[in-house]
View 1 (cartoon, rainbow, N blue to C red):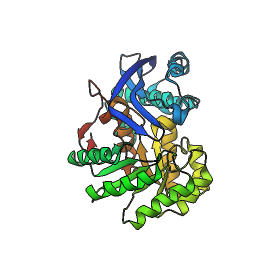
View 2: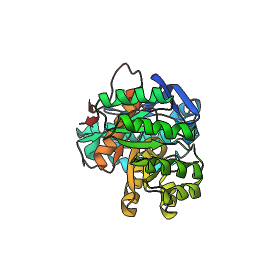
View 3: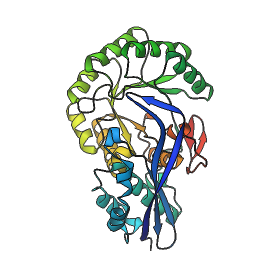
View 4: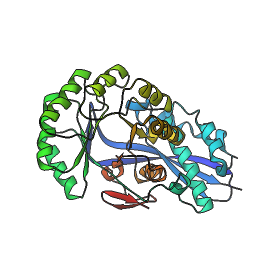
Length: 342
């Protein structure tokens, strides 16, 4: 039998290689929760939660207290019937990163039990994906230095953080474009602009001949009307990230015709909602990208297998572990930048 014997939480701390600066936030380190799920036969599955107070309202100290609650929910259940476990853990609405980590640990244990990798359990659509790499907010000189390094590593998709200074952001994108022609750009404002600022931003770049593949979350998380305004006045596809946490958020965004893209992050939705969002987006002809919070290789592993299994994504923003000082690589995937494979 593949019944769950125990679920334990372990707190891990990682430093960033260099400070990571997004709109109104600079991170020097991250604290993540490793979920260790053991079966009665000794098989162990692993997941990782990377909480975000800014997006999910999560605090690490509160999340650690959910260990006993999760044990009470699922100990004794059979991982081969993982859909039942997903239905029960869907109640962890207030702690979606824990929901994601627990649900993936279940899949990981099931994978070890039957000798089939998780990406094949989820469909086996691909064997390889390409990740972008992110340029955080800084001076124009700092951003250009980062871009040149990113290109030298083989990356062809660059994610650029903006949202704190409109004029400087425009100049930074123009400068980056000059040294990285041929690359694709995902530009992420992390809710930093007003709708009119966002439209001015993309209009000026379009007139300057810069092509943006995805313009991500230009306005406040709750400003769906503003997001729709940007979408219908932008020459580039517009994506929701912070505004799209659950399948219900995505349904509303589609109904409001507010986006071209949805950025799925397992830390926002868990595995179960992410699977639902994939099908909802497919039915509505909405494009998808897959992102991450501040996961180590253990956490990025979850998204890599999700992406490979579903094959649903145009872009993969799975670079967080590359930015962390991590003593041991723990992913069940191979890295040959800019590609991840199994």
